[in-house]
Image (cartoon, rainbow, N blue to C red; front, side):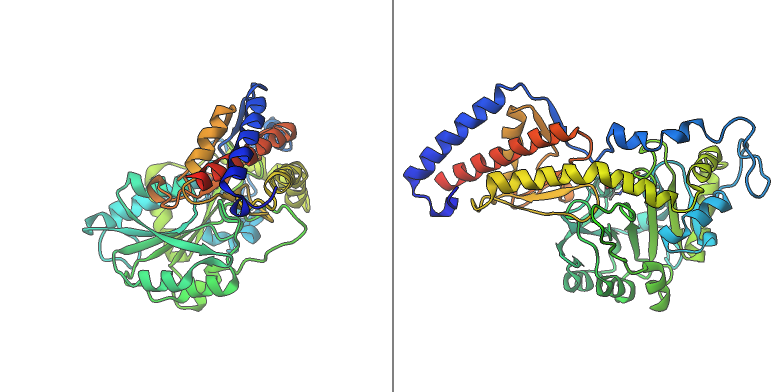
Amino acid sequence: MPPLADQTPDLLRSTLAELQARYASLQSRGLKLDMTRGKPSPEQLDLSEGLLTLPGNRDHLTEAGEDARNYGGVQGLAEVRALFSGVLGAPPEQIAVGNNSSLALMHDCLVYALLKGVPGGERPWSREPEIRFLCPVPGYDRHFALCETYGLVMEAVPMTPTGPDMAVVEERVRDPRVKGMWCVPQYSNPGGETYADETVERLARMEAGAPDFRLFWDNAYALHHLTERRPNLRNVLEAAAAAGRPDRPIVFASTSKVTLAGAGLAFLAASPENLRWYLGHAGKRSIGPDKLNQLRHVRFLREANALERLMEGHRRLLAPKFKAVTDTLERVLGGSGAARWTTPEGGYFILLEVPDGCATRVVELAAGCGLAMTPAGATHPYGRDPDDRMLRLAPSYPSLAEVEAAAEVIALCTLIAATEARLR
Ligand code: PLP
C-alpha cells in the first residue's frame, strides 16, 4: 500500500472503504482471541511438568540435612541460592528465595520501606510529605499499580535504545522526594530494550538527593532470549559496590517464565546490609517459605545446563509466535507509515507504536473483531499515554494459529485507525 501520508483525501476514502470490507470479513470469522498478558502457554508449562512429581516420596531433606517439610529457613535453601547465583549476579549469601512471585517481593520491599524505612534512611518513607518514583516509559503496568496503590507519585522518564534517558534521570534524581526507580534492565517490558553498560554504571554512581534512594532492579527476563545473542548485562550490584553505593540496588527475579508461572521461585539479591534488612522483615511476615518447592526445583534443574535447555525449549515455542506477529505487521503495514514496532531479542512483548491519538481506537476496533488487547495507556503511569500511541502485544499464550489471526486483526485495525486519523 502507498504511504498514507501520500494519499489524497479521495484515495484515503477508498482505502478506508476497502479496509472496512476486510474488517467485516474478519468479524464474520467470530474470533475469540486474547493477547492481553504475557502468560506462558500450556505447551511452555508442559516443559516443567516433571516438577509435579518431585521431590517424590521420602525425598524431603536439604543438603544441610534439614527437613524441607517443616517451618523455617527464611533465606531459602543454600543449594537453590547456589544454583541461581550466576543468574542473579550475587553470591549465595546475598540472595533470598521467596515464594512464587517476584512481584510480591517488590511489593513487600516497598511496604517495608514505607512502614519501616530502609538502611541509610532517616525515617520510614511514609513519614515523608511526598514520595516519588522514576518510571521509565513505556513500562510495566504492575509496577505502576504498586506506586498508585501506595500513593507514590510517578514521574515518567523516556526510554532510549540503551535504557532510560540518563540525562533526565540524573537531573530528576537530585530531588530528595525521589526515593526509587523501576528498572527492567534486560528485554524490558514492553519495549525489549537492554540497558547498556554505561547506563547501568551511571545509575549506580549518580548523585541522588535522597540518601536512601533505591533501584528496584526487576530482572524478570534474565534468561528469556529469543535469538542466539546474549546481551551480557552489566552486574548492577557490582557496579553499585564499585561506585561506593552498595545499598542502592535491590535485584528481583523469578522462575515464573522458566518453570511454572504460578508455582515457580522468586528471588531477591542485594548488598549484605539490604539483605539483613529484608530478612529481618520477611522473618516477621512468615516463618519460612515453601522449601519443598525449592527442593523440587533443585531436583528438576540439577543436571548441568538444565536451565539452558529449558530456556531453549521456551525459545523454540516462543520465537515462531514473535516472528508471526512481526511478519504479519510487515506484510500488512509495511510501507504504509501507519506504525512501527519492535523486533525483540528476548522477553515477552512487542511494542507497537501507532500514529498519535490512535492506540485507543485500535484496541476498540480489535475488540469488535473478538480480540482482547492490553488496554491503551497500560504502558504509562496512571494508565495515561499522553500521545495515545503505544500498544503492548503479548504473543506468548495463544497458539501459533491464533497469534497469526490476532496479528492480522491488529495490523488491519491499525491501518483503519491511521486512515481515519488522516481523514480527520
Ligand atoms: N516483572 C516484570 C517486568 C514482568 O513482566 C512480570 C510478569 O509479566 C513480573 C515481574 C511478574 O513476576 P512474578 O511472576 O515473579 O511475580
